[in-house]
Length: 616
Image 1 (cartoon, rainbow, N blue to C red):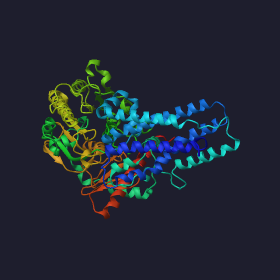
Image 2: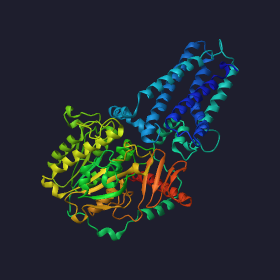
Image 3: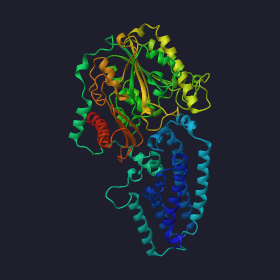
Image 4: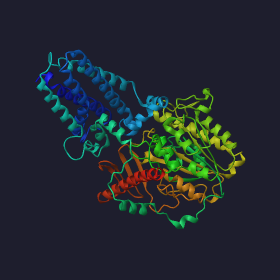
């Protein structure tokens, strides 16, 4: 049959071909090329057809209408332009997914898209891992698609007009396309689990249609909803079992001050891999190592996310990073969360935050201002010449400014310092102590520089009167893969340092380690416990000193890990497909159940806060 009769079917085949080519490119970059890797080109078909069906609905309508008008050139050009715009969109999603997957372990999604509102910071990240050949591939494929599109749209209209009965054909095609957008007539619409087939995550992300996944992530990012997997009673029992505290430990007292100053130092990408006391690299963070001999180090601490905004919410608001949700960009959620900033304000502490980057990035400014921060300093409060890196002001200048500003605060105070020089592309002043030829060398050099700035900060603070009444909390915002020694979902990627330090810490606890398994979002309850303050509003945060059932939760894209003292399981939280486990097969199901219960509990907690705070 000619294109005049079935143009939408030709267009559908065009998009299936485009998806196949981009999938092959992704396959060459990221798939292990063994085992069940080739099955990705079969498991993808329903999702590819679904996405293609979305793309042909409007063109089919234009084509049908154009059949009854004489101005065929106009309708032809309209279809060409429309399909080229869609092709450009697909090229952007597909090509950006190749380098992004290497860094994040997920293809382009709503979280990545949210950074378009901070173009300078986004460019600073992109230029670190995007390569010239990514652009070359994209231009080549778009050019080929352009030529095919031009040829595809020749002679697709009847002259001078189609017969009136012809409208039945596009009507059938459009209705069929609408059905295929949901994957068919089955009760449950198409989901990502329909493309995920392997225990190898690389193969699964090869199979998934990147454009479909991106659009779906945008839709999911709009709302936090219950999965309705579990009843209220099941959630209550789980909470009681895993979040009860050991009251016998309430009498433990780790600090020697009633109302100490509290200074949080949030360190960019300080993975355990560069911390010698945690079994990491020697020499990269020598000042931290020195401080640890006088500090109290949590050696089994883990973050739940992989971005700074996730880390800040965990550290200050006690909430884990939820998969597929960028909570910092959701003002209605962010404002309703509890926060240590607000809590210390209530206790008449002076609160402040210092950051060398732009506080508008990832909505940090909104978060801190809405929770009542008294003083906020970012790169815009420095002279322009000090913003010497892509991300802003180097760490040593931020530490110097923080020292000056803190010294002018009335005690007691609660201050937060956020570093950024160890963020890609690792622009630092001075020499690169470990070289700068490779990413691992640049990363180690940037950590070394930040560590030197950290050491200088403490040396200068020791001369201040407020220092003797201060407890410092040193914590990474998230882990990192920059050393090249861990994968996307390896436990060690999320292993981070958390350390208490300062004169306010009792001498008997200095130089000690606590091996309790703890999460980054346990920090609020842990600090409030030290101060003997109530922490009930931080319902998902539990003091590391009181935990009876230690666990670790972290998420990266659609994958999440749940771990206890002996076992761990890595699985897809949507399809429940297990990628990796360190437990017996019979324990696997229970571990997955516990992880999903925690995820559901976290969602309900956030929805509950909104409901309570928005009640009339």
